[in-house]
Length: 380
Image (cartoon, rainbow, N blue to C red; front, side):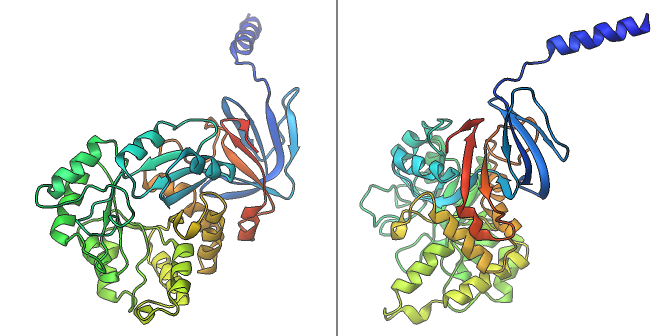
């Protein structure tokens, strides 16, 4: 009788199990899941998500099998600092394996239109601060489009609440004292208002003393690494680190800017690029979370493959390649609380990249993307 009951129980379980069709298995492949790397793994997926990740071979009747030997699977790349203006930028990003762009200063209208393209199979996911917090004549007002500012009639609190009302995913502060600039009383009010509205605050900075002051105000992150002379001192580091802020070094654009300034009279006021690399490594060694971002389209950077150059420079700074990959994947999704992205695991969406080679051994292999899947659909 017990055997009969067991038989019928198994029959019911089999009949109720969802039928898997169009399954793909990638065999004998290295997998960086966003946290750890494991060699010689096997991954099965379909349009419903990742079915299994195992060290043992996976078999599905009728499955398409891809030989993953000598290859690596990584999560979709993310870019934590851009200024994207149209859907072409979103497509350019995704075609290069960059599945999300985090805009750090734009108009409310453009940000809304770009957010409306979220979850589209063709375009990268878009997040934005909308306009950054600045003052009349301050950084962010010089680009030829309308920027609301904090002024005699618009308080820091009202500016921030307006951004939240208009759908900002986080708040950006533009602190740049080589121009008219937002003061620290105003930044404190922006940060307090944003945090009350459960929004992160990220700040543009160029000077370590500004980073220290904003760190004391509990800023959540820095949209650039400071690169003025001298390098941050011990007291400034203490203040920066107490905030537990992340940093988006934007090394590629910093390198290009310093090269362009080589013959300018103010060049001596800024660090050599090798010292910028040392400052990034020091930030990493002190426990700051590093995020990858390019500041595209500045310096005519594209929204896709130029992110690879940023990763190479992070590696050149001495950051281990596994943490370089985290800087462009899980560090961003964790710091910005992006629920659409995260680690690769059973039951999660089948969105990932297959690379020929292993970027954990050689970061240059990041350029060797063979296939890209989004929600189980191959897009490259």
